[in-house]
Length: 149
Image 1 (cartoon, rainbow, N blue to C red):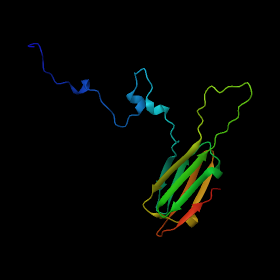
Image 2 (image 1 turned 30 degrees about the horizontal axis):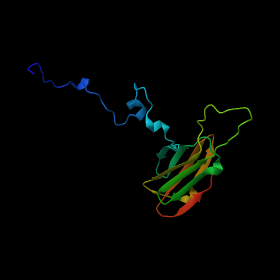
Image 3 (image 1 turned 180 degrees about the horizontal axis):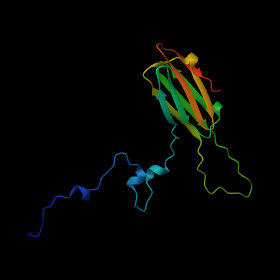
Image 4 (image 1 turned 60 degrees about the vertical axis):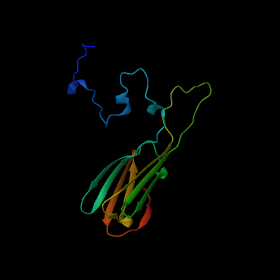
């Protein structure tokens, strides 16, 4: 028992756990896949949001969806976007599916802004998988569903 040596590990010897790392990063080097990847999750609607004195400009990435399947709701300073992806099951006789990564389901994103939105002047356009919203600022509170052109 006299051979025991007490030591304190150096900072670079301690494994660094990054709280922002993905689960894949945590399981790198293991011979197993993380359980999280096997769960089906709804695709996230990614957005870019800019602001000037008169309006907010939003670009949302929603690929593979028909514009009729996108809903935009403005309620005061809260903006909600939902989209539904429909699965097309076209299989031919004598053909087997090896891999299917195209998902079906719905996505939803909602957020609040600092200023209320003038829904009467709000514009929405959808082309090539990108939804573009122009959300003029207003000092009032109303609610309206926006039609996408």
